Length: 421
Image (cartoon, helix red, strand yellow):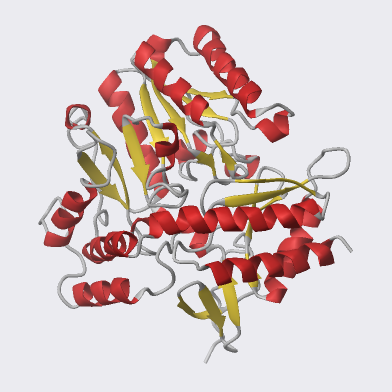
């Protein structure tokens, strides 16, 4: 028999050396049954942990009943139930949903809706934002050139404005916010006239861009400008939604309401499901045929999402994210206090970044990479992010306990000590 000739693309590089055999709660086990604390959660996806029994049971039950009912051909009960259930947690007034499969697809759907609803063409995004890899989503993304390089020309009509990244700018949060809002006003005066601007897209916390929280005053300033100019405010909650930041939605910390919310990742505990939510009067302005897809709103994914929402509510996972996030941040700040190479620890809830910098303030990706690798060797799985790869991020499942947080901080301390020896 001939040897198999197919293999994965050589571009797919693993962040850790683990060959996962199974997952349970906050842990992943390899094929030798070695246990790892998983503080990646599938990049913020397994919000209720790996294989939560209630999610597994719901998915198994649905698999035996109806795997796929294409939702513009036939309707199915899990989709209707999920839509009704999301109505109880979505921002007030965002009462219409359109489902797809991935964050990128949902971003593209939001952009399509914004352009059709306003009759305007331009979108404003912020430097360091990540909105996806498909063509329009990549055109909105500036978290790193690797997403955009070699595929141009990109979609026109995208204006990039500064994000209030206080640590990088060497400013206080207040100064960075004032600077970013002033520059946004300048963009509206010099590059994209308000009457040409359909939407402002923003992440409540930069994800791939370095785990940088948007100050509440900045988000409120965006809301004010959107209202002033008739621009739609689109909040990308792909990574920050469903309790990740210690509030159900990342934008809640600022007390604002978006015009369109983009959801994905933590919604279905690992099953592919995403979507956009908008008010009825806005959603109905989408053009006929502009919303659809084969797999969006898959029955099994919807069943898993319903169970996920039950677990988040019944186990108090939003409050747990806030409490455990505070504990994690305090622990990481203690590690940083002992190592000058960690210049900043930041992030709300269970979405925390450790930024490594050299003595001259430049990014220190080499030490970040060594610490990341050493942590995996010690049994703690993490990810890096940021344009220079010098931020190590921690994204444990929302079920994480105080003991697991303390264990992770201890392993991280050992890894940083080894990386800086």
